[in-house]
Amino acid sequence: MARFDEVKELILSLEGDFDKFYNKGNQAAGTRVRKGMQDLKTLAQDIRAEVQNKKNEGEK
Image 1 (cartoon, rainbow, N blue to C red):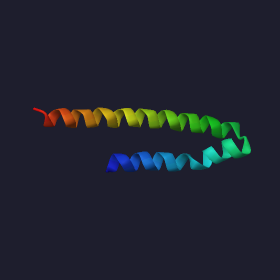
Image 2 (cartoon, rainbow, N blue to C red; image 1 turned 90 degrees about the horizontal axis):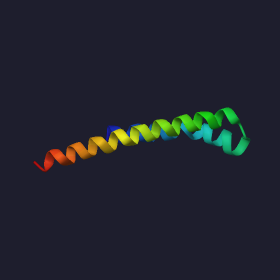
Image 3 (tube, one colour; image 1 turned 90 degrees about the vertical axis):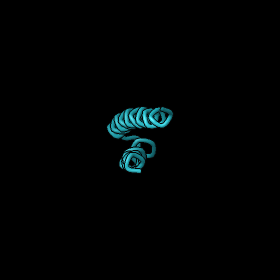
């Protein structure tokens, strides 16, 4: 569950920047949102690989 908590933390940390970008038009916040979403993509890919490895270990 630690990995799930990492995902939740990352998303929650971006909430303020989402608000600033979408509701207030702050362009710098948009840049931070894009970076955060890229970090989320990387984290998700790592988790996918981890899950696949655990799944494959169980099939042996």
